[in-house]
Length: 214
Length: 211
Image 1 (tube, one colour):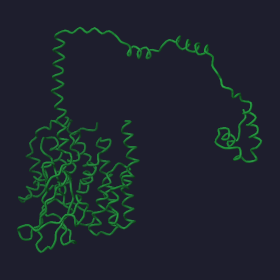
Image 2 (cartoon, one colour; image 1 turned 120 degrees about the horizontal axis):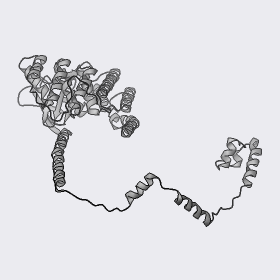
Image 3 (cartoon, one colour; image 1 turned 180 degrees about the horizontal axis):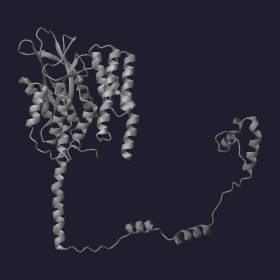
Image 4 (spheres, chains in turn brown, purple; image 1 turned 180 degrees about the vertical axis):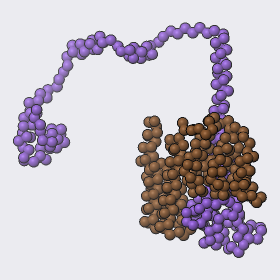
């Protein structure tokens, strides 16, 4: 408990400094000064809440490279910050006291791809102690981006977490099915039905349908 | 009890000089000075007898339970250990069981190492007939449109570049002739927040997957 409080305090104090540090320096010369200041402020607020700042800076750089109007860049950065916040909240609700940056970023990606906060929370919960939380969320986002319906995506990833199957191969398999003329949903359905149910030895047994909160 | 003005208190504490106090506090200052003059500043010497009396009183107080326990821990004790042969066998079996379970716990470590950022070579290919220049920009190069140009491949209209990318997820798009942003038609895409699409690439330690 003491360590958690110390970590939160250190993140709370160091976060704003980091957001104004090297990552935010990347904005210099890429955005008008006032837009850069707004992006820095969003990043500082994010890091003060233990959210990753680099994706926000990267989004601003992307907008600048694409020649987007500064106001729209700031809006896109704010939208991403909101997704990061929702992602962190969903993962926290899954029983993770301090969500790691990779998982929060992957959760935001999944939200952007079409999953909702409840589905992100369900995936984070399903990943449990497997150490694959970020991977599961990233793969789910990719499947949704391919066009697999979110509910089916969550089902497929959860089943894969339950087995020894390599999560990273899922999207490639769906794409292979799509290359043969199947829809994304049909390709994913083939995986759902054909997936071997080999239990994952690293995953603690949990009752199906029950609460997995610690 | 006499209550002095806060500034006079600060003078008493040595934080202010008398000059810094206003004339209206002169009377209080004089009073405080008079009190101070009455203080005996001679050093106090405690007699040896007092020291002995105090220490005798301390030693006469019975030690508390935790104090006795702490003292016992610090003292040397003689321990006699009688071992039965079957107990030795049981201990050996227990140690074997612990060793059997230990590798199972450590088996996660290699997975963690494998998840550490590693670089993997990834080939980007775009069919863009008629293009004069093509580059790829993404999260891996700070969306720099000039950092990663593609070169003409052997086949007509095909552009390609091979990059070393760290494991993780990357978003990217091709830039044709410096102004036209083109999503990778072979990769899944997501909304970029600016009305266009970004392509998604996942690089795993075992190799890149357009996923």
